[in-house]
Image 1 (cartoon, one colour):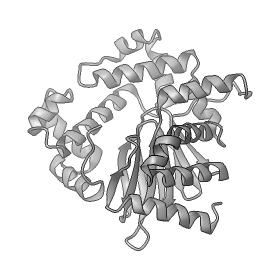
Image 2: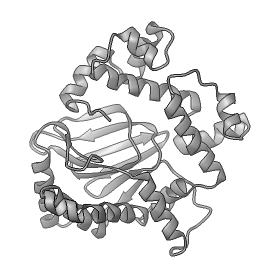
Image 3: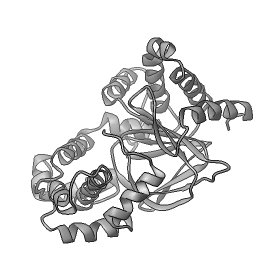
Image 4: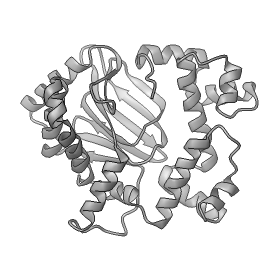
Length: 303
């Protein structure tokens, strides 16, 4: 449990860095601070690998039958990008304030490798894409120092690399870091699925056949399906569709062309099918979703 004085200090630092509703960029490209004043239900999200620290308000992530809490007492860590559903609690009197911290995957892998010879790990621990863990005093401490540095460019330039490294380290040795490290460390099967996710990300707008993806991973189709769903909580086809729709969502918000152009750009042969899938996934038409994003998330970033 975070002490009241520490919580207040974190909130003041974060609130100053997040003056407007939506995502607020910081001096570090991989760190954003979200301010939200609205209760949200059943919102489709696709987070990048990293962690979300909610300093005020609360969020829940829903992946299959699992509920992942991230609030003032819990943080969410993401080892691989997975589509899931999110709900959040906030108000104008007590806006939700959350730090979104992107992993430097090379740095994370370096730390995992260094820990191999220092910390015993259980080979039976199953790799997980989403992990909700209790906040620890060490994580609260480094977040406070990081937020302070984000207010002072000189301090950030000198201390920033060490602070970012420490955040990675604290997450990886955290209460449920084993499941996260298992995904980042990978055994043979996990490595194959993670590599396949990378290929899907690179080719999401091309024609992707599951048998070919399985063959490229050196796996049978049934094994590929089972291990893919075990890590991501969804089937390969569902994952590809969600990735295409989330990419389209950003293109719509950035006004990258007509609906037909955007549909084709993300791999849809039929604009009509694209529109149906988009509304089924987001519960809004592309135009309605663009307005919703502007209102709740602010201007979309270019990354």
